[in-house]
Every structure is written in structure tokens, then in C-alpha cells.
Image 1 (cartoon, rainbow, N blue to C red):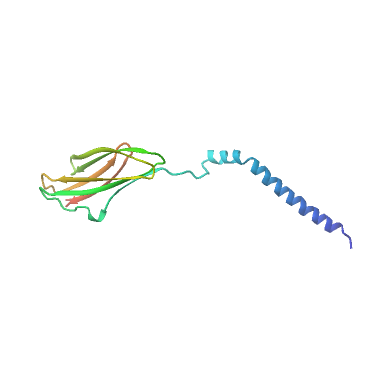
Image 2: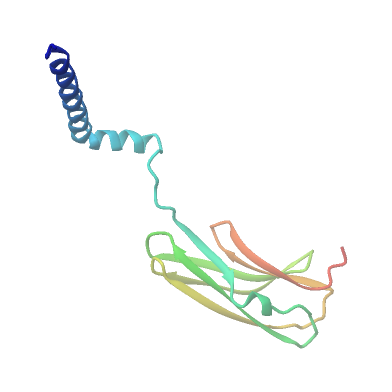
Length: 152
């Protein structure tokens, strides 16, 4: 038997392993450039920055509207923007034809912090229906709920 084929096979295995190690060393040395290239093509996941806006105790929001009745509700702003953020907001009624302001203010919230704002309002009339809106001004973000009977 000849030892030539075994030597040839060992040489092939060693050469293949050396090539694989060389490729890993090359990729490791170019990792910064590879990362920058993948990042430029938006293939590297980025942190998502956003704001949550929601009603507290949404199941207990008022449903009916009566003249002289005072309603209360609260909403929360949760800052997940990655930095301290100031939020101007507006609270208002909409009855299908006009907007009635209730409150307008600002709150500054640290990253990953929350601010819960409470609102109360006493109805001067008893309209058929109204929607209450909370809007984060300049962010095109709002929440709302409807009270009363919508004729449509």
C-alpha cells in the first residue's frame, strides 16, 4: 500500500482548515468596515424610539353625558424616545361640528419614564354625543373615546 493518498488527504484537510482560519481572521480584521456597510444598507437592527399614549382604566371611561355632570379621566404618556422629551398636549371635545378645548399643557419626561395626567370637566349642556381627544401636539399622535349616543 502506498502512503501517498493518505498524505494527500491530510494535506487537503490541513489546507482547508488553514483557509477557513484565514477567512475568519480576514473577516475579523474587516469587521468595522463590514458593520458600517451593513448599517448603511439598513441591515443592522436599530433601537426604535417611540412614545406610548394611553388612557388609564380605559374600562371605566365615562359613557353618558348629562348637563351639570362632572367627568374625570386620566391618560399616561410613556417616553421611549431614548432621551428626555418635552410633550406639549391638548385635551378637547369634538361634537361633530365644533371643538371645545378642555386643557393644554406640557410635561417633560425622562427616557423610559411616564407621566399620568388627570382631567375633569363639567358639562354645561347635554349634547347627543361627544368625543374626548388627547393629542400630542406636533407628533400626529392622539387617543380618544366617545360618550353619548352617536346619531349615525
